[in-house]
Amino acid sequence: MSMDFISLEDIRRARKRIEGKVVETPTVPSPSLSRLAGVPVYLKLEHRQTTGSFKLRGASNAIASLSADEKSRGVTAASTGNHGRGLAHAAKLEGMRAVICMSKLVPENKLSEIRNLGAEVRIIGNSQDDAQEEVDRLVAEDGLIMLPPFDHPAIVAGQGTVGLEIMEAVPDAATVLVPLSGGGLAAGIAAAVKALNPDVRVIGISMARGAAMKASLDAGRPVLVEELPTLADSLGGGVGLDNQLTFAMCRDLLDEVILLSEDEIAAGIRHAYEQEREIIEGGGAVGIAALLAGRIRTDGPVVALLSGRNIDMGLHRSIICGDWAASGEQAA
Image (tube, rainbow, N blue to C red):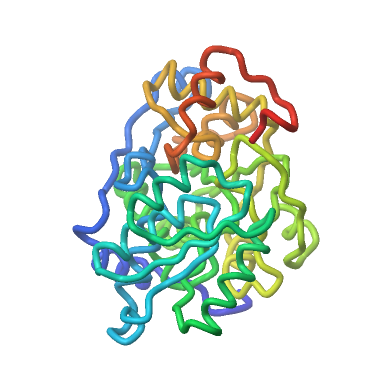
C-alpha cells in the first residue's frame, strides 16, 4: 500500500472512545432478499443511529480526539446533511460551537434538523466545493477547527466501527455492501473487514448521477464531478482534489464499485419500506437496490448497510405510492 492507512487498532480505539455516545445498531436477516439472492442476506440497521445515520460515529470520534483548546474554538465542516447533523449533535454534547456549511442542493429537512441541534447553518453556492470555501474562510479568519465529512483519520476510524460490528454479527460474511460517496464510510469499513478477514469482498455502491469517487478511481486520481440532483443526495459531493486518505484507501481496499440509476434507488427505498418495514433515504438504500437489480454476485452471506433514514417524508410518500418518476426536477 502506498501510505499509512487507518489500522484495525485505530478503529478499535475509536470504538472505545465513542462508547456510550453512539448506538451499536442491529444486524438482522432479510428473508425476502435472501430468497432473491439465493444466499443469506443481512441488513445492518445503521439508519437507527441516534442522528439517523452512521455519520455520528466519525463525528463523535473526531470531537473526542480534540484537545481542550481545540474544543474551545469550535468546529466547522461542509456537509450534504448527515455529517453536519452528526457533528452538530456531538458538538452540542460537549457544549461546543458548530458551524455547518452546505450547498443549495441539501434538502430542507436536513437543514432544519441541524438548526434544531443548535448549530449555525450557512448555505453557500451549488456544490460541496462551494460550501468548503466558506469552511476554509472560517478556519483562516475565525480559528474554527475543520472536521471534514470523510477525509480525516478520526472520521474514517469512527466509521470503521460499523465494520467491527458487522463482522461480529455475521462472522461468515462473504460480501459487504457499503454506500460510497467521499469514501470515509467505505474506507473505514473496508479497513476493519479486510483486517479481520481479507477474503471478504467489500463493494462500494453509488448513484450514476455524479458519483465522484467512481470517476476518480477510473481516472486514477481525484477529479471534479458535477453535482446533480439525485435520490441519493447524501452520496453527493466531490472527494477533494487534495484528498489525503480516502481515495487511496478506496482504491486499494474496495473490490468493486457499482453505480445505480434513480429508478433502481427508488426500488430500494420501496423494498425497504414494503418488505423490511424500514424508512431509509436514497443513499441508505443502495445496497438493497443493488441486490434487487441483480448486480451482486456472491456464493456466501451478504451484509447490506442501511446507512441513513433522513429522507424528506413527502418524497418518501411519493416513491412508495408510485407518484415519483425519475427526472432532473424530481430526483432531488
